[in-house]
Amino acid sequence: MQLFMVFLIIVVVVTAIRTFSNSIAGRRADGLDQLKHRAQMNINMGLMFIAVALMQGISLGDWWIRLLMIAVGALGIYNLIFGLRARNFYRKKLEEQQ
Image 1 (cartoon, rainbow, N blue to C red):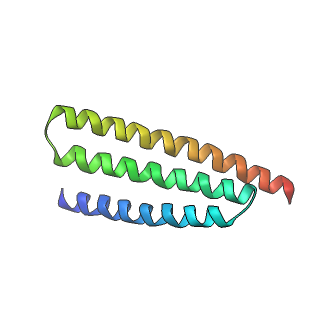
Image 2 (image 1 turned 90 degrees about the vertical axis):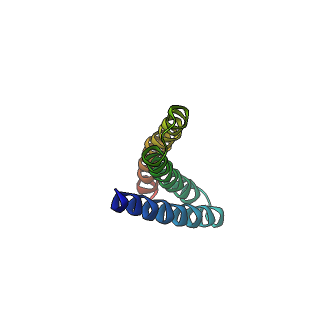
Image 3 (image 1 turned 135 degrees about the horizontal axis):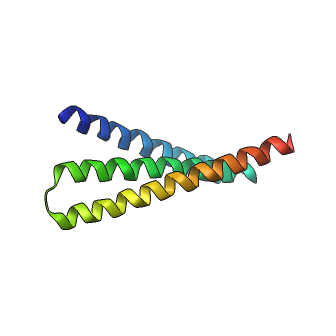
């Protein structure tokens, strides 16, 4: 159980760093590159929300907190799915331009 918690903490830290770096890179880029960085940022945020929801769901016991963590996990899944869709869309657009 502790090994899984350590893994989730590592996932949260890595995805937070990647979220911030994609945010900065997206602000410096223009056009489709900016949108591609935003899509990657959404993917990282989705993974981070899912990891936080799993961490809190494992460690806390009240039913209302678990319900709240299900909502956070659902938000993470939403970010992950739409980030992947946007990334694929912008990748195809970039390939068409080149």
